[in-house]
Length: 323
Image (cartoon, rainbow, N blue to C red; front, side):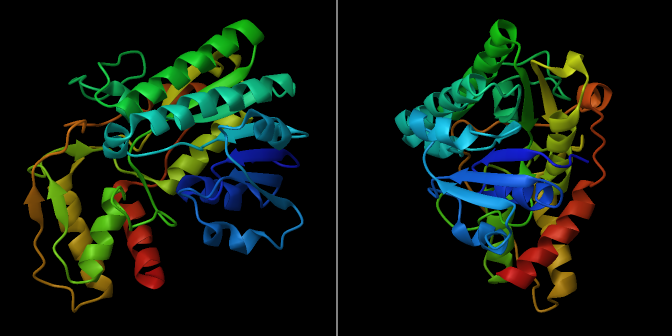
């Protein structure tokens, strides 16, 4: 476990970022950097009274703010991004500005501050139209959305900074992360919280496509573990590399709905006879997704303990208690 470090978490008020702040705050100083465009102040309110926690409200698109944020830090966990494949198709310019210009600002500010370790969030979307399963880091397809393009550009920039400047960059390709603090509301909400809220409200969850599409749904505690592995590894063979962050299993969206109805029904027996409704599939969505985590296991010691079923049980319990 990392201890006694000063860690900058960009996007720290968001879903993944706030979970990282909470975990690393146990033994470190944490600086949360977020513009609150999608992150929520309520996610970090419990930490504001902790003397080892500090919040900077700012935008990664502003280079001077990035320079100020990294001062005195030992490492950076870069989670800030404009998420959602559909949103990137509607508004590619903003997605590009946040995810590419903002990423480069943070990378450059980190280098100029003399900070070596830069761990950043990439995405399984970079695998694009690659049909081969499981997805392995060395082979990707053509990107299917502007969002995927931005994440691919991030990976190239990070690798260039590793080669040119010796930065200890490590990219984590997240596969469909879920868990507490993930927002169920809004047009671009992720599937699992959106489905849970619909079912809790007695409504039919809406599936885009036939529901046979698959995902490697990954519980947030596995993602926290991956970030700690990447932040603390001394394996020089890991620097400049990309690693899948997943559990390594394939679950269809139809199967997901069945599990959610069962788990929510165990806690709220009045929930019954709910069936999904189907809408046309969305542009840019990957059809099938499953990761190999062998490389992360071998090079940074990633060993995910939370299966899809175990994670869903914890996530459902949290949403039942908090929605």
